[in-house]
Length: 286
View 1: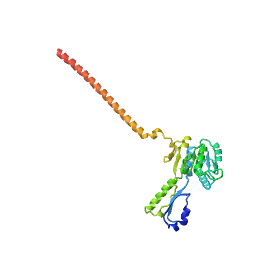
View 2: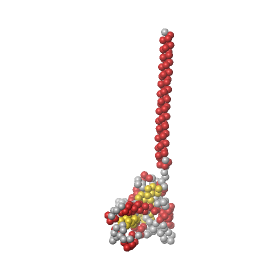
View 3: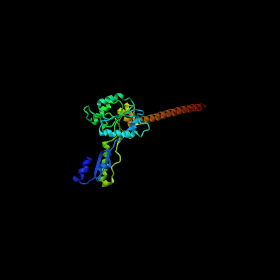
View 4: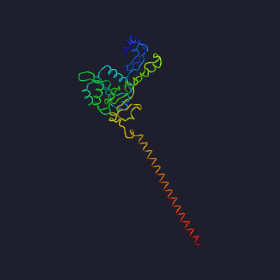
């Protein structure tokens, strides 16, 4: 689409402001010679996802699986560079052209605490690349540990998630750029976004099965399929009911104290009256 704009936009529409979204690994050379353009790139957050996975499962072995496409190989290189930041990095076992039968074989090697990152899709039996939904479903069903990913379109297939590239967030960011242009701001003064608007998204199902709770995840993460307790579901109702019961208990206690005091005062009055009657009788007698 960006190449189409470079070739035909000016001839078809003139040099009108153009906003792009979701361009993978954007570099300025991609829009060289094209004026009035800005946008939002898409970049995978391999380092952030890797860092969290190693924090959640310290000491675990690292397995990386993919479909052997250019995207998988680029992401593998990104992970390799991310591992260089560690003084004692885990050994990475990369299976980047793997099919379903190989995933089954790999699953037999994986133990609790190991880390699996899906850096692309997987291959069908005929060698074609499986669609992302099918790939995520197959891998998450076969692999016995949480599977981390780089894109939000895998979320919902049973994978654990990660710091994922989000098409929705890219669209929101691009819309905000368009709003600025429509409000009169010169597109030439609006640079292409430096970072992809990725976000933490997790499916709590596989993470909770592995003993990972919400408190171990980033505070701003989107959490799906989490087990919500009665307290979390009815927190305000429980608090309201507790306040009502507490107030009623305090009121009953005050009423009881008041009744006791009234009874004590009445007893003292009767005692005093009795003493006065005795005194009057004695005076009358004398």
